[in-house]
Image 1 (cartoon, rainbow, N blue to C red):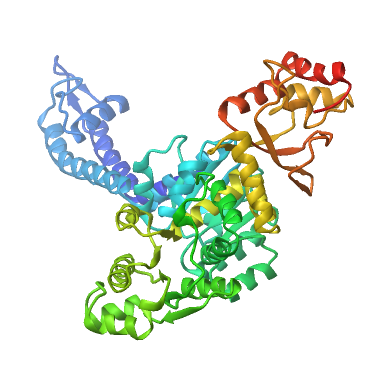
Image 2 (cartoon, one colour; image 1 turned 180 degrees about the vertical axis):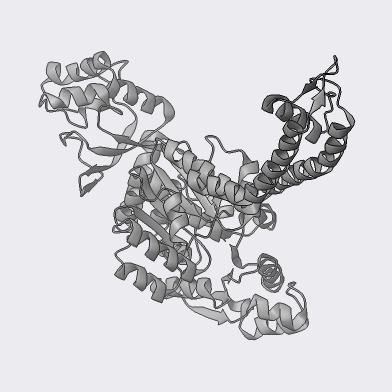
Length: 555
């Protein structure tokens, strides 16, 4: 990298250097050879140093005066000639240096060298994100500095400038480069030991495919999180043995299915993404007839979800882009539009889903449908997080924000892996099981509990780890005792225990803990703080374990 910068400098300044050397040499040689006269009238010849010193300030136009003695006419004639050639040569050299500073190739080489140094200095595990947009910004906001660092590549210089203006802390190394270029990916650190994965969430499935294939070839050990929305692309990634394929439309389809058939399973999933653990009236989806507007990727995914749930539906095959080309507007609501809705039976429908790729079109379509059928349950696709406030103001019953769905799913997989596992495991159960879990959590931990992920190791549970190393048998119930009064039980629930590749959903409290176990714990902040003290402080742990010794049993 340094060699490239040096080579560009030498290549650009080679001719200016030669010109300066020649002009200085000619001027200095003449001054040495032409005899001068000292103050006493004696002949003298300038030394090389005197000549060099004089030419240096003459060529740079500083002009200190004649040295070491006043020049005679022969010297002045020579100096007059030299002024022009040396000043011209000097300015030519300065101009070349200025041009070099502005040289794009040198700028890129310096930026690349700076970027590479930033990557080498990263001590934490890091992910490489390809492309900077609303989705990846949301991921960076939550992930950067919280156990991981982020490196960004984008071929659009304006996007990188936008990222720099965000002033993320810790700083996010970013570079303008083609994400499908092998050398650029290597510079981003894909071969470094602390590079744990790459994230490619472009709208273009083909670009995601190119990046995933290249990253798989460069480093087979890293995680590759990639977006895919077509069945063919998903199958292609599965054949590549990629495990973390994110399809926002499939996620929305699944949520729609569970929202209709098992609302408490839906609730447990949405709680993992920040929703309060309580079903509101509008969270119950109707079981009647649906109208699906838009037959693109999301429309097809929604239809699949409705068919799985056994729901009757009618499809309004409208394309927002074609609509704009035809009518030169994105505002739905002409008499022809109204006739289309009526002919499809909007007045007989219980719900409408606007799933086109234009937010304004979706909003105006739902507004017009509500005028024709005020009792409609409304569901809208929102394509950009930037329009969220507008959709909320429209009082739509349920909003699916494609960008948020994708960002949340990616973040949860990286930063909340146990929550991600819990969502998949919960879907294997029925609605009755989920309702029992929700009621239990509400009764024990309150209406808005938080969940926490804890690994039983010296970093996260020092005191407990030390006791387990001595082969002491400690159960989940043992560490659920209050540190204020060990006769009392903490208001805390163990949702999941992961041991290697084994997963235990709702583990039994009599289960013996082993080193490196991972726990998904539900509690309010106060009770979880007590839990943290107990597993990390030797004396607190000793106190709660006394209950088992004195009562010869477990809770």
